[in-house]
Image 1 (tube, rainbow, N blue to C red):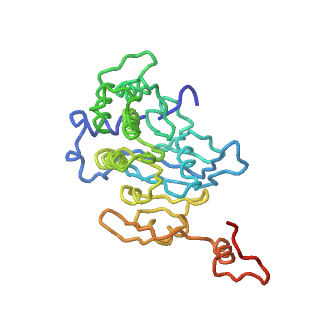
Image 2 (cartoon, helix red, strand yellow; image 1 turned 30 degrees about the horizontal axis):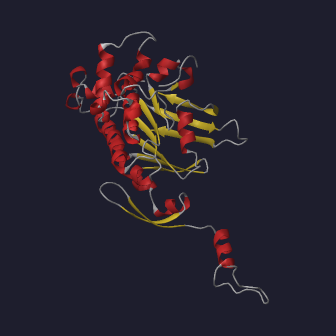
Image 3 (tube, rainbow, N blue to C red; image 1 turned 90 degrees about the vertical axis):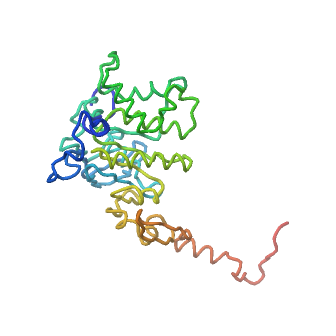
Length: 325
């Protein structure tokens, strides 16, 4: 792959949020499938690791994302969900396997071509503190422009659409360095939306945000799903959010896919016990499975150790049971 790296598109967000230049949902052929223009995205037989580790984190797993829907990757810390996303985004080299976008290996695409089709918002985002919100969002248009080319009218329309969708129009002239953490995250989302990609990958976009900004981020994801042909794949630390907002879930444990399917199929008391190691109550609701955590689960060895050292354990004869003060 050459030059810079990142992903983009022409047909997703812009086509939907600017009805004058695209067919509306009401004008679609009623016999056509919904999301028929959405991109197909898949990883096949993926082996992904890090140079510092002898063993791969992801060992030969395959993921096929439903076009035009929201797929959430979930799992406990260290399960490999962010590693899988980075491999899909071409941010980590594959030890084996293939990532396909509309049937093409993404490694066959030049950098800007890939950046017009595939967008990534990672957990590590750095920008000059003095840059304005509007200018930062404008950087999302780089796959569509030459290095020294000025912004076109279409670029400016895309920037305006992204700022509006992210709900940061009132921050347009502010310096990024003056914003709160939640506001900055919305601005970064606006930047990746300005790329107008077919597929959007988000790595834990709600982590470290207060509840208000978490809901705003997920509201953007919901809008993309309902009003565009963009395919969204995101890593979520909060399985409650995944159960509520995702169409499809992939649960990982120890670098392997443990379960996949709709939230109702994946989010079960058995899975929460086996994958997340908690006892929980799961009840179906109109907004997806509702999870009530009850207690952490302990493995047999831990329970055995606790039993041996617990307060009811009888000490051997002659043992000093006094406590130092």
